[in-house]
Image (cartoon, rainbow, N blue to C red; front, side):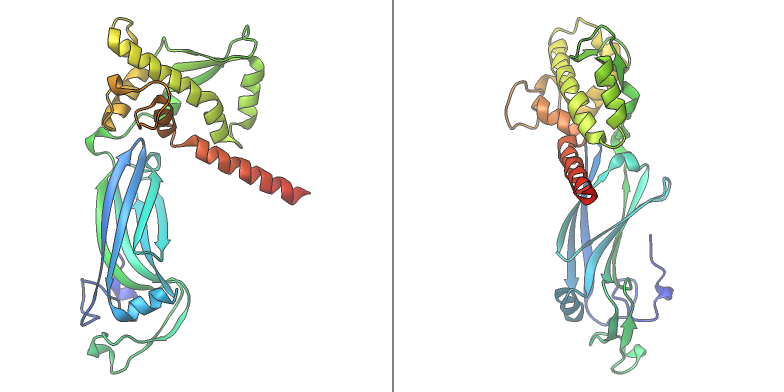
Length: 294
């Protein structure tokens, strides 16, 4: 989103015009796409004493605007710090993503004056800035979210949960087919469907994370032997591609415990975008809601 400078009746610090005779606002954005998450590392660089004072007073903040117009995604991230890390679910994005950077008023500012205003605005000119008004415009970046083929198949396309009527209560995974099928008892199946909307991440953590850990271990063993035909199934290709695009070969998967990012437990968490963390949020939210009802 590129701001139309003509919409602001007051000076805006920008490299695109001469509203300020001195000063600059820049932002460097580094991006990384890992396991379906777009991670942005943003460093803001402001060289203007007047705006720096407003920042120290909490009257303005740095803002990064992320937009993917093709799917209608728009999100604003604000920070008072010169560095900010942002994580976005890449499943919400496709093709080109535009990233714009600004300095924005967090409250109404009466009589704003800056010694670096261009004399064309008048001697000792001052302006009333409304909350949300843009005071500085930084660079704009465009990211191709699908570069290197990183438009992953969705987990929902290769995972399914099904009933094993003879199952007393345990869980097993059928890997013989294009879709991984997680078989559970009728009771567990009913529990899953009762809670999959309200406690989505808890259900993923409870049902699918352990199953995928088993699948990853099987993939490593099959990769050693290469005689079971597992690599012909669609789900296998999706997981192999996902791992390779994140710099992990199947043979490098580590079994057992340990802190390595190639450990099956950590890989399963990354594949599902850290469901344990989100599940804890769901529990805390449920506790708060329960407390409000008392």
